[in-house]
Structure formats: C-alpha cells, structure tokens
Length: 234
Image (cartoon, rainbow, N blue to C red; front, side, top):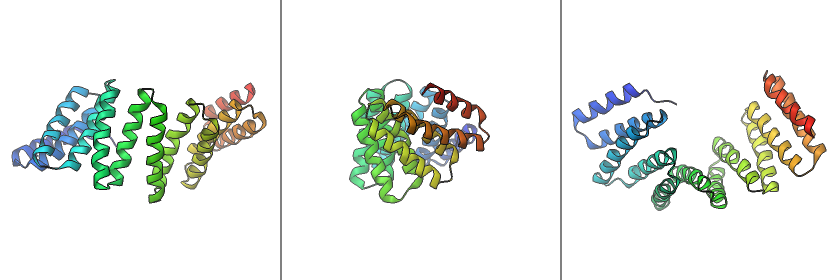
C-alpha cells in the first residue's frame, strides 16, 4: 500500500516536536518508505540513514536490521547490488540471532533480489528456497505463493527445467487454493512454456489450453489471444 507522503511528514514533524527518539525513528522509516515508493532515492536515503542512527542510539538491533533492509532496497534501486547484498546479509544475521522468522523471510527476499542482480543465480535460488521452507513451515499460503512465483522463472533462467516445471505446477495449485484464478492461469502459461522447452509439445498444448480457457473465463481476452499465439508456435 502506498504511503501518503504528506501524512508521513506531518507525523514525523509531530514526533520531532515531542522529542521521543523511538517515535522519530518510526516516523522516519515511514517517510523513507514513502520516498522510496516514489523512487526519490536521495530523500529516502536521508530518512533511513537518520532512522538507522537512532536505532543504534536506542540499542535496538531489530529496528536497525529493518532499516538496513530498507537501505538495501534503496541501494538496489540505485543499481548498487553489492551494497544491497551486504546490507541484507547484515540484517539476516540479526534476525537469525533473534530467531525472527518474519524478519528472516524479508531479509532473504531482499538478499535474493540483490544476488540475482549480481548474476549469482544459484545463491539467489538458495535464499528463496530457505524463505520458502520458512513460510511452508508456518503454513503461510500467501508467502508460499510469493516465493514459488519468484523461484519458478529463476529456475527456468538457470536451465533447471524440472525444478521450474515443478515450481510452476506448485504455483498453480497454491493459486487455485487461494482462489486466485488469474495467477492460476499465469502458472499454467509457465508450465506450458517449460514443457515446450523440454519438447513435450502435447503436454505444453494442454497447459496452454487450460491457461487460455481460464483467461477467457476471467474476461482477459487479450491474454487469451497471447496464449493462442504461443499454441500456434508449437
């Protein structure tokens, strides 16, 4: 959800007036996030840097780790994947030490994005696999969908076709369970694409047909036409 920037700045001004460091740090984090959402990286960096300083002053390692993840996202958006990976690893170490699974999952997500940008696909996949194992253990359906959705195309890019196929199929099942029929259709497209790469044309055609029919049911006729184009290429 996009943060209202004016409201966030007003809350920060109120917190500064009250002169409570914890409230100021929280407000700065929110302001930084609002700037990041608008791709205003300098302003975001300034807010997060001050928040990080306050977390150190307050001896709040968990808060500092969350700010480090935000700083990692700023670095990533600015094309500094090395810095992003370093910050994400630092945050992950804190969350590991605190046995904070929610923090670990977020840190692994940010770390995987940085590693993928660095071309370190094997390590990016490992980070995502670890995050997926955590959310599976917690029974978090939304998290399982998210990380499976990240892993499937990564496996495909790595030429790990069997893993990609299994992930797209798992994504389809999870999306169907969640009642997300558009994502179910997109997963079927992924299944068809990987099967086509494996020269399993009849199975690919069946997957594409499923995707096309789902898109039509959803009224997404342009998507359905795109799938038909893929079917014609088989």
